[in-house]
Length: 314
Image 1 (cartoon, rainbow, N blue to C red):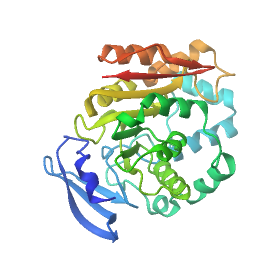
Image 2: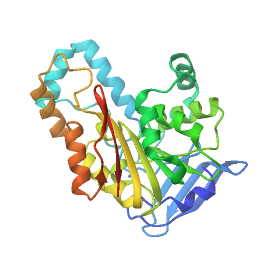
Image 3: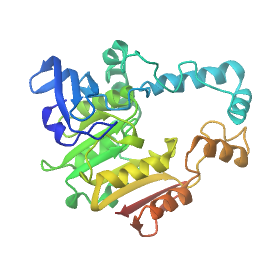
């Protein structure tokens, strides 16, 4: 983490100004290990592997572990039995959705893994080939020449970000945020392999309480990010808070959301009941209505097969 990132950052708990705390390891102008301390509430937030961890203290950042557990349960019990557990709301991951008091925000193993194997996997699968249509359309709708401070929300595997950084100029200031430390480290590794190590900063944070200053960004992107957030309306509230008046939020997502991997074993009504219980959007109509209620204006969305993209202006 570079110290000039402090201008954008705020405490996720009270939105107070953050200051550099103890620095344990530094490389050139980058802080690799240390802490940020809130001038308001006094909470200390760790910096691990060069990334500030600004998710609320109780929120887990190892969501890949939970995802892998779901896959293993499906393999052991069968997809149908797991689907019924989800439908009955009786499944709880062994690691829990929240971190226990005293647990580290990031384990040493997560720091060590960095972005190495994900970078290689990316190079083999998509590499430097042509971007997908959703990524290209999202960047086009962002209208980059008019945007200077850009946030990529729920970066995940970085498919949009890897294309976006190719179009950034020296006067652009881009930040990627995701709840998963490992996803960000993997994507950071990919960006470095693509030759753009300094074009984007990475911050671990929860989209439902973004660790950024009010009205800081003039452009925000989401490549299916809202589709995966439990309590996505809170994330839209936060997008509105950190976006300047007249700023643009571009979201690409599924026109009709399903429970991934269980489409063939659950009816549409059963899938919708699970999504509603989790606080996830049911698709395009739900996202557009949430944006409309929060004062965003937009033209008719662009649609292509099962996905849509909308540019909404605050």
